[in-house]
Length: 77
Image (cartoon, rainbow, N blue to C red; front, side, top):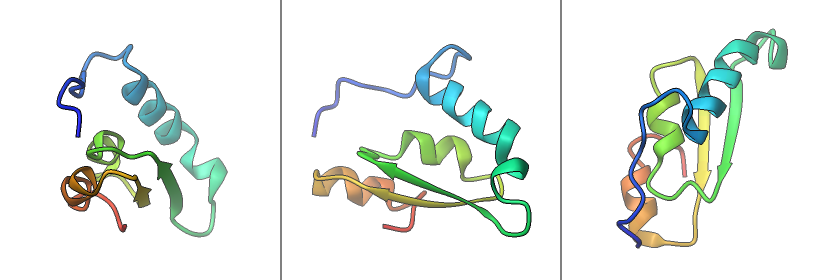
């Protein structure tokens, strides 16, 4: 697992942009049920960290078993 990438918390990071968009549109995406997010290539679960306190059902998958172990705290894997 690459330790090079870290979660950036500034509003211009890709993870922050995706999380903001999902939060803004979640009621349009799933009006009568929880909004489901599939994060393919979830790595260590950065997007899941940002969305875990929101009303999303999160599923993640990654090829790196070490990353999946870490991401499991935020996703149903």
